[in-house]
Each structure stands twice: as C-alpha cells, then as structure tokens.
Image 1 (cartoon, rainbow, N blue to C red):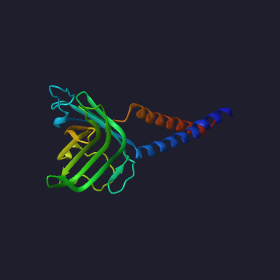
Image 2: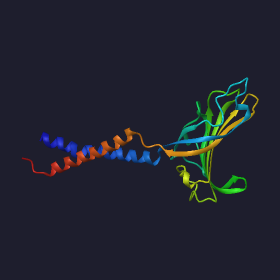
Image 3: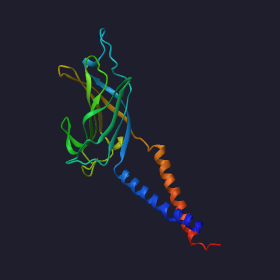
Image 4: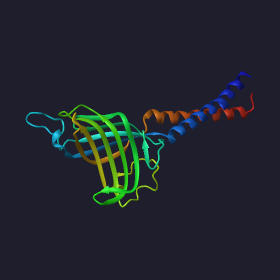
Length: 230
C-alpha cells in the first residue's frame, strides 16, 4: 500500500506541478524581457564634447561603440507607442559609458512615416532617459536608437515586436544627447554595424530541461501504476 502511495505521488502530483510550471513559463514567454546587443561607429560628435588643449574629453571620432538594451514585449500601448517598455540600456563610446536612468522611455513602431530628407518608410525606435558622467560640463540625459527601411514593408502592423534584422534596413542610427546647466544640447551619434539577440541564459535552458525530466518521471510513475503489483 505504501508503495502504491509513493507511485501515486510520482504519477499524478509531479506532472501537475510540471503543468503549473509550464503554464507559468508560457505566460512569461508571451510577455518576455528581450535583450539585444549592438556594435557601431561614431559619425559625429558636437564640438562642445571634443577635447581641447585645455580640456580633455573621453569622446572622439574613431572610438568603438558597444551597447545593449532590454524591453518587455508584453508592454501595452496605443498607436504603436509603448511607454515604459525599456527595462535596461547601456551605450559605450570607447571607455565612456551611459546607462538607463529613471524617467520616460518607450519603444515605438512607425509605418509610412517621415524618415527625414523627404523619405518615407517604416521605423523601429527606442528612446530612454540616460545617465552618465559629465563631459566638459555636459551631462547625458537621453539616448535613442532608430532602425529604418525606406519605402516601408518592415511591419504588417504597429504591434510591439523585436527589432528588424540588419539586412532588412536601409538606415540605422544611435544618438546620445547631453545638456549643460544653461540648457544647451549637444550630441554624439553614429550608426550600427551589428544588432544581435542575446540568447536565453543557461539557467532558463536548464529549467526547461528539468521540466521535461519531471514530466518524464511522472509518466513513468503512471506506467508503473498500471502494472499489476506482485
């Protein structure tokens, strides 16, 4: 009798636990935090940020650019605008790094919008409040990323989705905005070279493997329940 109880626990209770975890995992996947990393180059730095014989600066043309951002695919929005979607952000220009600050942020999906220069098309855009060390009296306050395709065709609607692949784009841009105490705004900007989704962490993969093993254990218990007891 005790043996039958043990198999009952394995055969019924454990699969039930696994099912609950799978339901929770499926919900989390539906509204997941998605992370992307990127590399790029610097095309323009406002004169106020550049080094002079009197004032050094960590920013200059030719420095490598790296960074990452994370957003929640389950964020609600209206008209293609998804405020509060950004959950993490870093942008490094050489040794100088700016990161996400508390404040307004959003991911916006545009269809048939003005891309500048008289061009029309689709755009995936991220804007976030930024923080970092001052550079020559200017402090970073905002960062934005734009991924464009002239002529459209990137999106079938304005639902929140992952950034489009680089080979589908006609233009890219990152921009870091700085401001001094007088309200003067200067920028560092450039383009993307790579944009890559960051894989799920190993812990998540192990979690999924564990669930599969748990379900298998429960199925084995059910098979043993059906067998005649000696």
